[in-house]
Amino acid sequence: LRPQRRIVSLHLRHEFGIRTFGYTSLIIDPPNGQMPALTPAGQALAATRTRGTFGPGPFDALEDFSLYDRCVTRGVLGSLLPVIYGNGLRITQNPNAVAISYEMIHDTRIIPLDSRPALDGGIRQYMGSARGRFEGDTLVVETTNFTDKTSIGVNGGGPPNSERLKLTERFTRVDPAMIEYVASIDDPVAYTAPWTLRVMITSRPGYEVLEYSCHEGNGAVHNALSGERVY
Image (cartoon, rainbow, N blue to C red; front, side):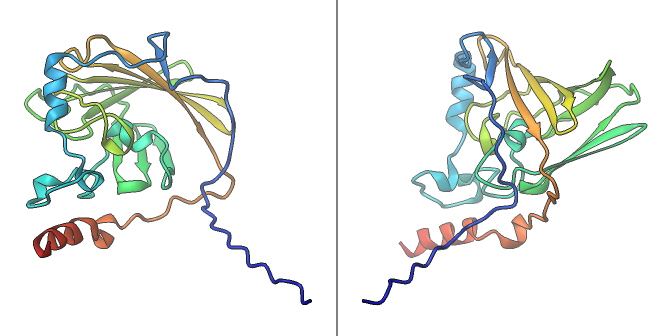
């Protein structure tokens, strides 16, 4: 008998790399590791969110798609929390600002370090208005002026935020390859209590943040709308 030829297919992504940590939850406050309950107003906000192409439809207009489907944004936390691919970050700094670029949906946040005042309260942005400062070796970023159109889960889905959200992020380099990221969510409109999560940002030798041509390559909206019409 001839030996059987085995064909092995390997699917590799360049961001794959494993470091394990003894965390039982990404949420570190409250101590039980669970997100506080939504307020009635938070529940009302959640009801306005669409699952987009992750839901059953119908798909009749752009408003039936999420901001993620439409390649608009995943929000601040939605851009950083780990998902199945495109988790790269590029963090750069000059004397006056820090810039954080996210690989998927290609948002870039410019965080001034020059003590300038926050934007006027009438100005609202999907990624908010960030102001940064250093406390010792920790970069502290306080962000306000959010819209109430985004959520703070992975890929910009999940639990909502209101315009009252104040996000406080702390970036602390704990060794040459890792940054501890701690984000505190204070949104009295949407949540019954503030809460805090922690993620370890780790480097990969030779990693390159690739272009994410979302609008140019986006078939989700076109295909869902045309398919709905044919159906």
